[in-house]
Image (cartoon, rainbow, N blue to C red; front, side, top):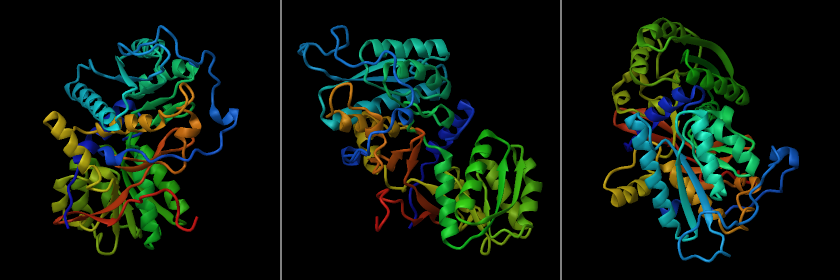
Length: 414
């Protein structure tokens, strides 16, 4: 049965990846599950020791009118590019704020205060913004969107002992108090390659662009093939345009691979596809593999891609969130807006703890994970997010789920 696609989300994720210069990139029923915290980490595992930790409620902190001074609300600082001069980025920031407000409403927690600041375009503006939020008593920071802003705010947040739930796709800024909610391409790669090896594919080739996204996905590809005890027998790189991809595609088609990984999308992918077929690759014998960039309707009519696999969230996972957002704001949520919903839902879940001690590393690193708009996720010890993804197949009738997304991180029998 054909399923809906969400190509716009992945297009923006890839653009966000390029802007960051590194990695690419629910309704109330989809709120996170109650975590069972793991043992407290050692000081070394916890990262930098804060020099000026926020440890108590203070009179100068922001509070709602007519609330008792003895009561400590959950102050959440939200950093997004609200004043961006790029229309699509500004629209996304506004949608993410609406999504955060929707999540707060769904949580029913009246003690949470959302405090906003613009992340700006320079390190200085980002630092000034996070300092203002921390001076207002923010216990946790949601955002920023771009890696340069995350890097700029992380030092001040660590100094105060305040964690950051950022939306960047640059894994180099993760860790030591910074947790990335953004969609990382490594998750796509690991999922589709591990599924392919489980289905008996052992000899792999790759055809990738000379981009930051290509570098990251190829590194993950090599790791995943090794973990599955397969072999990488050919890797071809090309400049990120259709003409440059043709000769490398011919070479890959003539290799002895039984699976070919192609982490590109758009017109380049649709140029590669017929070239592979014309060069002798039989898609009935050689499995084509991709990332979520394949989730584009134009790919459904490419014969060589038919039967190919890629990883993505379960296609109907976010239906409830989309419906609720549309009912509240009169339009469908753009691109990555669901990430801020998940951030606030997670905060609402952990808000039951002791003020200034509730958003601990131990709580955020719950190995059972959380259930969000796009399925289950959990944070790794390095601050990146692992996501439960489905394996999808390209068919003329639509994208079809061939291996469902996991519903838990707990392995059967454990």
